[in-house]
Amino acid sequence: MPEPLWEIAIQQNRTKSVQIGTENTLIFAGNKGSGKSTIINRFLEKDETPKSTLALDYTFGRKGAGNYHTRVVSHIWELGGGVKLSDLIGVVMTPNNILNLHLILVIDLSKPEELWDTVETLLKSASARVDQILNRLHQKNITRIQNIFSEKSRNRISSTHPDTELLNPFPLPLTFLGTKHDILMTRDAEQQNLICKTIRFLSHYYGASVYFSSTKEDGVLKRIRAVLNHIAFNGKDLSNVQMETGKPLAIPVGVDSFSNIGTPPNANLEIGRLTAKSPLEMWKNIFCSKFPQKSGLTFSLNNITNHLIDPSKDPQYSEPLIDSARKVKDEELESKRRQSERHMLNLLQQITSEGLIIV
Image (cartoon, rainbow, N blue to C red):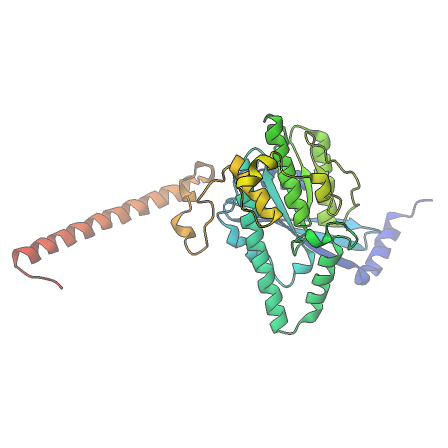
């Protein structure tokens, strides 16, 4: 006979004091317009039309586990602006969440000309912040967090993996999430092969997982949702693996290998004129020779105000009452600016007519 709801409620109330709370933090970062907001909304089942993220966006998800005695809360941050605001990624990372932090790099597969710069810039910013946190913990002699963090990093990839000595594992759990796979499939086979192999190399080199998605394929979207559920709520681990070029990649951390990935396509034609000192540099040279990266993508926080587009002029953020008040103030400011210019001009004419010299 099923247990009455009232009895279940009493039992849960009695055990409330022993409930365990787990919190995870996910950071979504990647190309501008790569679909980060869409992925997050689908994962949290939010029926909202996504808007461009200006800087940092926050939301959260909560899920019960077991006999409802464990609650998992997932804090989800989205970094907007592509790599222009890469410095902001450090704002989210703190000593309090570093042990339960996961970085998800969302890569727009339709824009290979931004791929390498995006990965390199975002990983550099995140890695620098991790180093800063660990150094501060070391200075304060807080060894417990450092020890747990180091142990988790070591256990991410098996010590028996044949590529262990060749990898440069990223300090945080990392997932490459390639979007717009359907658009990638419209390129010729050679370009598809180079893009897929390069992402596989980067993912394996940094000790990450890699998954491709497309809004056109429901089965792929379900898989991505299951992946995020595993990351955000400690859900069931996934065992499905897909390494075949031409199909959406699905490769958990530690499953791939350099022998499976192989050398870059047409490497023999390029290697003679390249001066690469490491496999990473070789892949970068070959990939960027085929897909020259866009320059001027990175900005620091020190000069960010000189380069951002004014959101008040963006029609998608229009607010009639605020905009009309702003327009009045802008007109008043422009009027005072013109008055000031006329005053300075009259003053200069007066000085000139009186024969005065200002040093």
